[in-house]
Amino acid sequence: MSVLDRYVVRAILGAVLMVVAVVLVLGALFVFIDQQDDIGTGRYTALGAFWYTLLNLPQLAYELLPIMALIGSLLGLGSLARGSEITVIRATGVSIGRLAGISLTAGLILVIVEVLLGEFLAPPLQQAAREQKAFSKLNNVSFGGGSGAWVRDGDLILNVAGQFGQRQFGSMQIFELSAQHRLLALGHAQRATAGAKGKWLLSDYTESRFAADTVTTRPPGQRLLESNVSAGFLGLAVEDPKQLTSRALWRLISYFRANELDAREYLFAFWSRIARTIAIAFSVLLAIPFVLGSLRSAGAGTRMMMGLLLGIGFFLLQRLIESGTVVFSLNPVMLAWLPTTLLAVVTVGLLALAR
Image: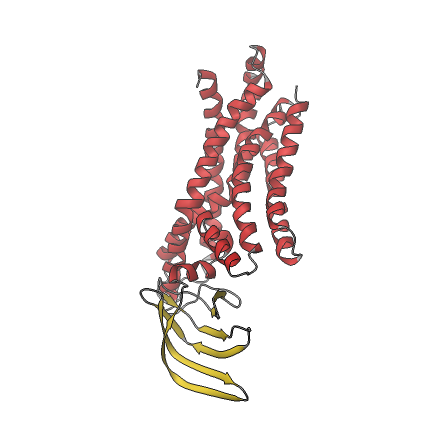
């Protein structure tokens, strides 16, 4: 890497780092303010809210890095353009393609940072934050929302309300089906505890078993259930797909496909993570045609406003498509790549027109 390459990359990454710092400080402030209503509940204190806020910052950085990369690139390259450094660089014979290649190096570094955040740092820290808050507020709290997680294991269909420990789950319903998909039994446990080798201890378990024209009920008690569904996997099913790593999402997709279940939500989340990560590189490149054109002599405020408008537009489009994938049964893979594809087309088109 030449001196020029290092200089431009350092200018871009320095501006992105500044934007990240500002956004995370503001984000932390909003998250901490949002926790004020929960402070004082159980053993949840202001210090606990502070730690909850800090542990959620990597997830916030992961979700907003494409926007922050665009704003930072506009500021970094814009400062070079306003100081006529871009003009000098172009006058020495550096083409727009070469400048794009240098900027792409900074983009690839940010892509690596995004992967590290999304796959290794943000998910475990966010899970730790949720557990710390939940255990501080209440003894028994469910992380699942709505109707909980539905999981199929052969002739069994399990519905768990939520998870409040590594191996502790909330109420679980068990539907036992025949080979002809007729309902044989319906059971309900107040609590499910995962044991070793696929065994589950069901507490306060009641059951209604159907045979011909009769229904046999079982009084409350305990039941030992053998299942191929592990505590770790069931915990993934309870989680929001957007908060899972790519590896965890692929495990869920494989499981859903093996059991002929609808995996569209997880497919979209999986490919959306990959597409959003790649979009960071195009976000950096998108700054080049702007700083060479209309924003060459503009101030930092104008460039930041332009970056915000473009970044928020990309973010809203992604969220709109996410809702449409589930509601309208559209192709999840194609739609997951649609925002990034549009960004790539616009970027390449503007670079081709840049002078």
